[in-house]
Structure formats: structure tokens, C-alpha cells
Amino acid sequence: MIADSSAATITILAIVGYIGVLWLALAFSVIRDARRRAMSQVMFGVAIVLAFVPPFLGALVYFVLRPPQTIDEERALEELYEPSPNGESHTRPCPHCGREIERTFIICPYCRTQFARRCANCDRALRLGWSICPYCATEVVAPAGMKRPPVPR
Ligand SMILES: [Zn+2]
Ligand SMILES: [Zn+2]
Image 1 (spheres, helix red, strand yellow):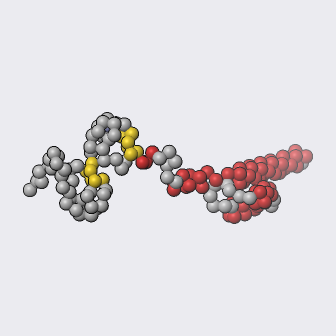
Image 2 (cartoon, protein in one colour):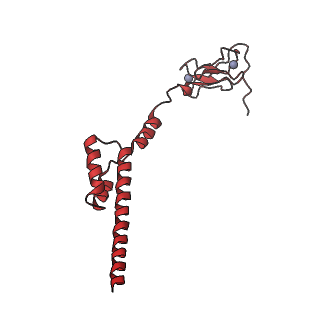
Image 3 (tube, rainbow, N blue to C red):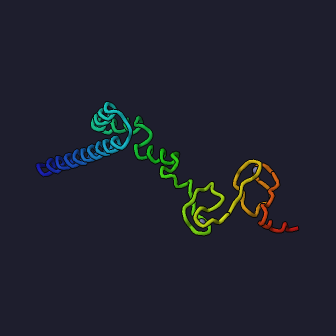
């Protein structure tokens, strides 16, 4: 009989210890999650209290009420909407010499290769092969000395 009761005590202790470990692990996961989220000091304090009391239920309440986005996720979203800070999108390599030139250039200032020209009407950059401006439908007049490619029939 004595052996039976000590076995029962050990079983109960094991169950209590098991639940205790689960409770602590859940509490720490709540605190770690709360640290990564954008919230005020007061809310963070409430989250820590909820992590421990009432056991399990507090953590459940936290996971229901927590702010929807972590700080990392918010930063990632901001970066998506921000234009690239170093202005990379404004330049491109020259098709002839490969040096960085601005996208709006119609001639490379380094090697003097002309790869586009401007529409006489709307002033947008046009490719040399184009015979009509796709933006304003103005006929492109080839400058003197430049042959317009034959129009295929
Ligand atoms: Zn060039
Ligand atoms: Zn035009």
C-alpha cells in the first residue's frame, strides 16, 4: 500500500511538473512574441502579466488581443513602399560602353553613342527605330544624316 501511494505521488508530481514546464514555456513564448511587436510599455507589462496569470488562459487572451504585426513585418512593408534610397532606379548602364548613365539620357556622355531621341511634340525619349511617337502619335522625322529603317510591308 505504501508503494502504491508513493507511486501516485510521483505520478501527480510528474503531471504537475509537466504542466508547470508547459506553462513556463508558453509564458516565455508570449514574452518573446510581445518583444517583437510594436506596443507601448504599458501594453508590454500587461502582456507579461497575461503570460503567467491566469495560467494558459492569459496566454490565450494575449494571442487573441496582440497587435497584428511584428516590428520586423512592419519594417519589411515600409521598405516595399519606399523608393530605393540610393537612387539606383534612376540610372542604367550605357548599352555601348556600359557606364552608369541616367535613364532619361538619350545619348551617352562618355562614348557619345546615341540610342534614343526626343519626340518633337511631347519631348519623351524615343528609340531610334521608332517612326512614330507611341505617347502622342506624332510622326517622327529622322534627323539629317540618320537613315530611317525601311518599313516592312
Ligand atoms: Zn556609353
Ligand atoms: Zn510624342
